[in-house]
Image (cartoon, rainbow, N blue to C red; front, side):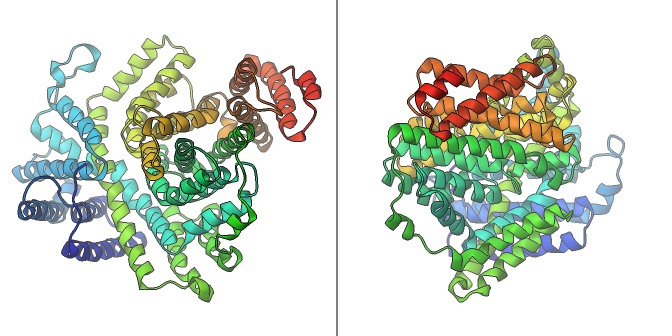
Length: 631
């Protein structure tokens, strides 16, 4: 990704465009318009902001680079104008019947080119390469052998399916950006600008700083809270890691381990309700499910993930003798009580979602309240700088998300119209010979590979198109299939060799990139097989009776806690490798236990696991708990 720094004129222009962008989004929330009116304007504004905030870099003279950026901005305006001028014709035309005009082809080519350049500036070349592969497949799929080949599209047909209807780049991905993602990014930017993120970090330090490995626990708690609001692993690492990583290093945690802890904690924020990650909004749209219900489905796995992460950090800190924060170090943080009123906006957001308000409406109300809450007490008043930051960051971050996911609409259009998704699903089932375990394992590997170097949302959309149909063909519910793909696309952010969140944390902590990636991946193993539990027990996703959900939650918590003991390597004393393998295997059995014939085995393992976990915290003499747990 090569982009220069915007000069003053670009920054002022971007701020003005961003304010108009916010005003437009507020207007369509209360006065909804036709999709082919809302979505092109949304994309046009996002493209303009992206080209202003991330001007072209490279060896060209500055005047040439500025001229190119101005041409790209002018092209973005022209493409947006095309959709507005031809709005009536585009909304009333019949696909595959009405002709594709010359100006349709010109505008379509321009839009695809703008999205490719925008995606390059937003997330780098890897996504661009993926897009180019699918574009090439659309035109030359007939040259490929076997099931993967198809007849190919001509230029008019390709333009029609990708840019001229509410499919392709103006389809579900852009719809989600317009209707959900923008408003939650708005809330995250506003809340961060008034000091909400710092409050989370300081609150976590006060809560966990005195415990063994307290700085690591504080990082996990603070990053999970902020990550659930920001919804971006890399952004969360950069914003919270500058505070948490030096703090962890100060108490004796090696720099690469501190970076790994921050990376996995920030990544897990995408799994934590109420906001979760950007991809969660896409998932809700694909499933046709209210976002609040989807967030509820993600609650139990997220809690299991973070409880296990806290446990493994606690146990490894005991094993390695990592000290807690001193009272003086804790008191260095600003007092919480005078700022506690700043917690009200996220609480209000959760309350509105639970009460049945639409997700976008709840986010807007919480955003407005975020700017007003600081004035409840004199010590938290904000000034023009904080207001300017809020109104600058919200549209900038929205543009960074909107353009890549709109570009992913090209992948969806090609995969669906060419029947690639259906053929891929059939091939996957055939390759696994109908085994649900083999199919899930192949899908898991595919999601992780797909996620290497791609933003989570891009990886999830591609994974959902290619893998979800195959998983559903095995009898898995749509909710479980989508969550399975979503989970592994999130974990791909810390899976080597390309782990974007780990790379960002290593840069912040000035640590080894390889060691940081391996450390984060090792910590992620406490939840790595949780998605298999979705398949075998949908109670984990809050489906079924309350009694069944409670039992499922208990079983999952025991399983992930067993993994924490295994990976932490400590249970009143350092554990041998053989003991760790046995405990880890027991945790795996507990996850897959609800699948029919092994229920009795799962119950036995869960009961045994409870004994092991109680032994960790009850401080029984080793001879007694070893005799009970057979470790």
